[in-house]
Amino acid sequence: MHDAATLGALDSTAKTLDEQKTRLQDLREEPARLLKHVRRQLTRRLNVSATTPFRQDGLLELPNLIGLAKQRQDAYQQELRDIEAERQELTATRQTWLET
Image (cartoon, rainbow, N blue to C red; front, side):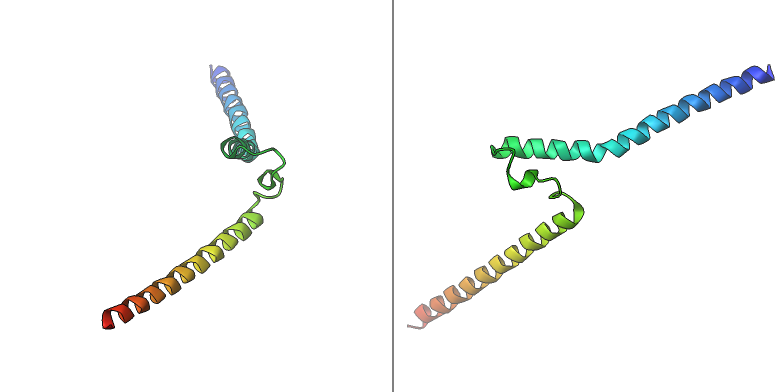
């Protein structure tokens, strides 16, 4: 009886171990699957060819994404400065009109 219980527990543990190994392998493969999915979606949504820059292999790696984010942030900050300068010019023009 004791041996049967031990054998059952061992079988159960072996099955759980196999399931965990399968899950671990799936998790290891998930980033590559997600990257393929993102590239496919970008190609489809943007109606561009497969040779466009976003399809490059290293583009979506973390250092490259950080660089792209910094470029976008700098561009947005410059746009905000331009908008603020234009707003100040319009305010000055409005003030001049009100004074006359």
